Length: 257
Ligand code: ADP
Ligand code: MG
Image (tube, rainbow, N blue to C red; front, top):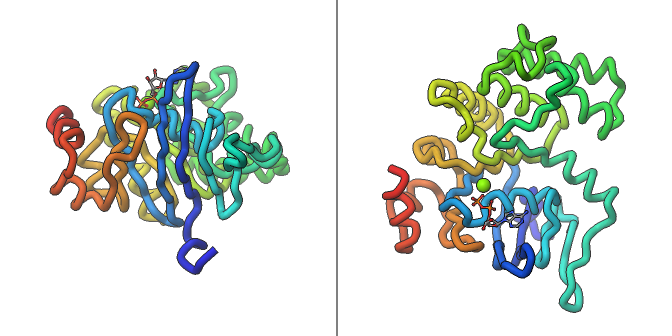
């Protein structure tokens, strides 16, 4: 590792994923540095969710390298992919939790139970300690009054903030967001974006798939435009949005404005 590299939390090289013989990711390269907010944008079906899901092995990559904190979780050897044992993958996944479009809360558990589930079961934290920390996180996200409620009693915005609390409870190295506001009623979007913005200001490392271009422009350190299974363009938001190089990015930008 050179000096530059110890800042890199996740490094992806030549990542490939195929489903039933169809190449969905065709060789993706990207690096996420500590404290950085990376946005992934691009057309529907271009592979954004697959990329996030491969990063924490909710999907198993077909080829390429994923390094987490310098450790290769998968790599290629003699033309086939080698993946670390499940225990190592589970540990890494715990440190890069994902916030989903549809929240994915446990509906039969209340808010507090949802938030302590990972710390208690995966991190083997003491239950009382986990409860104390969960309460603190929920308070910081304005959810003090919701701790005993069940997901069905919450608004979409509150559900998504519970999902964010659940990610934070893992003491994550990086949080992955897959279109966190796209299932929300319009009036609930800004509250969730604001929560993500505050996390960015606190120096959280985050990867955000989002169609909120104004949000990306104001918050991103790096933007990756993913289309047809590759990173077509990347760079700081001002550069990328002011000087799109490919017709694909130009078309994408005009389609969502
Ligand atoms: P995006 O998030 O950019 O909209 P996705 O990563 O969800 O794109 O999907 C990329 C492509 O991979 C799509 O053509 C999609 O149908 C396909 N795909 C995604 N997940 C699966 C799966 N589990 N099985 C088969 N095909 C899949
Ligand atoms: Mg998607």
